[in-house]
Image (tube, rainbow, N blue to C red; front, side, top):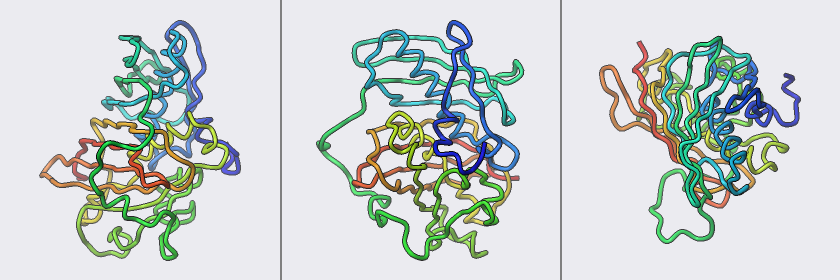
Length: 280
């Protein structure tokens, strides 16, 4: 895949039927953190397969993955992955599909996906959050993560999606330490953004887009995610997504990392929480 491709994320989340309740997807090497596939990308691929399964069962075309709860069993390599879907419920408002993502016969992800029509219109009540207070677009001194940037050499998908980091929160970029909270802006390619289904899956992926916030405390290295749950609150409006990743407890072995994703209108579109291991 070329980095000049017009819809790289849609290519990532395109699943092809290979049999009854069976699908296949191709994960390009650029959708990786270091040598391994990015967890948020695998979550999005599982969500895509679940939606295909429930649409095949006659669900409303407006249905989207509202909640994806993924347990990471092993770390697959880029390349072909096989997905098996099991329809658990296809109700009038809510559907549930279980998904297994495997490679070479080895299960890598087990996911439960709840599907329905996302919220629309004005919410009945909201609580102010720090992500909505970020400027709608990256500030002038935001750090652009390009393939040539030291972080871009590890977060390889920075070449396939716009990613700018708020340097005032990413203390690890300047060799200092601070609170375990990082803010950033991200946006899919135009052809991905204009396709609603792809934009939804990109927003879900953005619920895992930050580098581990442990880096702000001087703890570097692989911080493997063991479980990740993401909620889609509404379909994102076109434009930049604002993201904040933060943790409240960095334990001796485990830490949680929460993402809040806000669209260009200021609406919360994705919330996520993951349990990960402190880098060794």
